[in-house]
Image 1 (cartoon, rainbow over the protein chains, first blue to last red):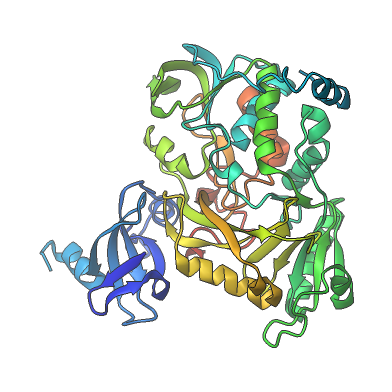
Image 2 (image 1 turned 60 degrees about the horizontal axis):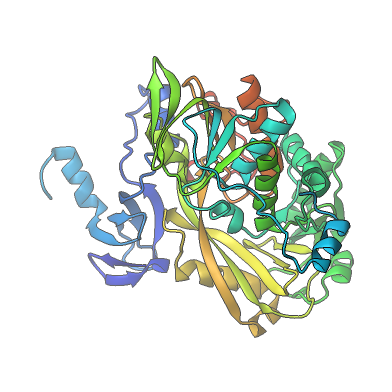
Length: 95
Length: 416
């Protein structure tokens, strides 16, 4: 499996480390309910198919990336800087 | 047909013509008392113990492919009960005791080989941790021996004791641990369950779970609708997919774990040995191949095959421990889909939906648990109450804070 880093080009997946599903968002601050925190920390969709997930290019440019990958085939559809994805999520605008 | 020396000799004289199939390839009926989804080791063992211990024989085991095609045929065959936490100790020891009596119980040669499991330690701190684990085991009546360097050298003189980075200081040995022929476990339980009337239905994929008034009533499958009073999920890496059919989210991620076999060689190692400074475990099969593995690849996967980066990592661990491995060629390797729970421990519990039961979250340790998982899951299904040995394996423990963090890690250790 190779991941096409937007900054470094196509690199072996051994250069990257994996965090997991990019979908969960951390409940806000001390006001967060225990149940919401439980869902965020422990529960996963764990889909078979297209999966948006966070990877870190630790042996390269050290950027956080959001990779869209098919978990059944490991085929990668899209790689975007996590910064852009977060900005889009926050503002609702395209990066 | 009962297998015995007499039956083998009798068949030999008759030219091996009269052997019968070991189980019926059943067509699904329209209704059962219990339908178990997943014809792996756990599902087949559950069916067997439902019939044997609880007299429930109107049971079907549904398998989307052929039985034993999933993780029971993809593991490294190791069995052990060297756990240190109260929630785990009685369960895995019960499993070990069931392994010890399994072949007589089901009249099947599963090649149970108690050749010993040796966990190596490489530092003073690790020795202390292993001493503590060994003491916890001995207090529960389980065998454990703490070996010093010379004790290890007597067993496995060929490993790299003087390694500059990870010198071998000793090991924790469980002599009753060992290996079991994994495919034979699936076949043996299938045959034993079939003899007690269980239908084993292959090539039957579940496509939906039917509910009425909050209660499970049956399954939609590729071979038609099957009604069931109780449905039991035992599908390892596919657990989240089936749970999603009833809008249930699980504390599980599916990850790929690779395993490896070298070319066959003369007897090299007569125990199971694990590296304490990396993740590497090795034993030798009766055909002569070294069977070994290491970490999961570390990303969500349903692909049943992994990547080269992890293969390199496993080989590096192996070479650090046992440099002679570099002389061997790799014969084959494969991947299986692990149901990685978020605390590294399993779930055997009800689901909050009446009539739906869950056996999942075995991470990369499900094979050794096969007999006890079947035994305890059958108890839960039959009596609607958890077996005392598996009472800690609750689905809601992540919400209540009663995690069983035997290794302090789940699918993503940074969360814990």
